[in-house]
Length: 447
Image (cartoon, rainbow, N blue to C red):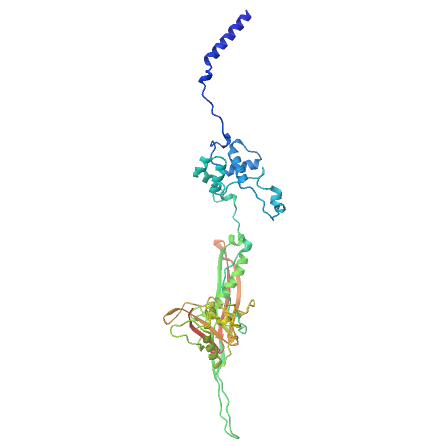
């Protein structure tokens, strides 16, 4: 009975199989796999972030397979290459991490063209033609991509903080110009305007009295200052320290204001009277009603005018443009006059080459020159509006009056309600020319 049951069961199973099994000739043909399924476009654009995750973990997930293959292909194409004569084995980075062919390193295309080349090499021609996917893959590694800025910190090289380039100080650098402390804002300087002179007489002849002509100058001392107001947060957080910045700039800026006042001050309101507009100066060489470019003859003529006034000039103060114009003067054969000591037909430095307070140039072999780029080079003379003035004089006849040197003070209370502090630098000074005829100006100097 059991045997009969088993036979029926087997027959039934075979019958069911026969009904549900497709004939061999009716089966569709299966296409053969020609390339690895990894490189089929079943993934999105390659992402550097995915590659970095796989590198960090030390193993690659199936979802990172495309990035793994791309990194390997890029490594083959852009691998580290040894250079003849260069011992890269001594490079500690290469010694520790090796070349790019490593399970702890990846290579990634950095340009669109490199990404095209790698994708073509992988057989991913359709992907290489998809500009959007290529751009996405490149952008994934860009420091400028939105959302990555926090990973790339900005470096401020505070130890290389650069201060503004400023004019040199001219007047106080001239040797022989004296600074005299004073105790009032009003200073009177007496002087002998005309000497009494002497004469001759016969034996027992009558002697005639002779008198000198005396005069005096009244000089008004005025204030020069710098003022800064700042938050206490800035004071606490700034690097370099805010106090260091103030110390380096406040005194500098007040000194520059003083120098400009000594040269160009108009004498009105809060301005002191500077040299350019000083009364009673010797008239320098004439450059015409509308001015013109200077020549060395103009400085010779001005030197002579001062010698006629019994003053031997020993300094020049001018804008650098004046020396630039003189430096380009040539003789008939093309030799530069200021540098043609030995017939050299090329320009050369005609400065002294000495550091610090040394003059920046020497004219006529005897006149040291100091520059100030603060001097006005847009002064109007006649129809010309591009003129400047050079100062030639005898230093011992120039006197700086100083009621108060540059002093710095700080206050935490000037803007207490705003949690601010302030710093100021104050100076009080003036300039005097003891004998005004000892200084001359050359006006109307054009480029």
